[in-house]
Image (cartoon, rainbow, N blue to C red; front, top):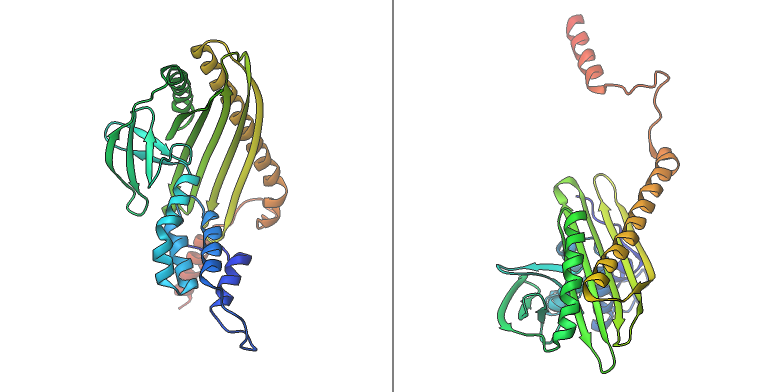
Length: 307
């Protein structure tokens, strides 16, 4: 399995553990090490956090610091990647939007909160957490219903969550989508996630929706190819009743994500005829590939016949 090539900060980290030719290179202090490791772990490809952590541990050569900071590193990774958490009766994404305190998270659909161990990846201490704003909860449930139907129809293994935040003058709704495929045995991993936010006031007839779509992929069989794409979206959403607004919102998300996917496919087609073509070995004049195994076998048989 090929490891990702060292970035500038990882080279700095590696150099800090070894003296320079003059012997005067000052080592990084603890805070600098934590900052560098945190930045590198944020760049870890989907499904490869543990491998990246192990590699950085070998570079840092400070097990005490690494293990002490490990829960914090894992927590950041969990929330940044919208990690899905599934229990017997519910499934929810772990994000900064439903984080409560002391590693507790809220599942608004099941109206429960729980403590999450980021290292063991286990939920414990479930407690009832009912939503006090019934009007806001009605909006949230309708949005979740429409978004879930979209996700189930477009993702083989997708998860969505919708959260609500009340302020004195408005309700803020946040919708998150996550879908990942981890195929380390086939030397690739991938993640698609998106986040959508808009606000509602009692007099709202329309609202501005802001979204962010992120696609990450890593292919590492006899090479090291990374894909990282982020697209920001701004659209206007008409506000009518809860059910109709929720359906219109799901259509808005579908249109934006389809545009990103179609754009990626078009870029792949262009790359296939330009950049990727230059990497390929040219075909012989017959325009057919050579069966090297047959040629080698033929030579072996011929050599035996001569003997």
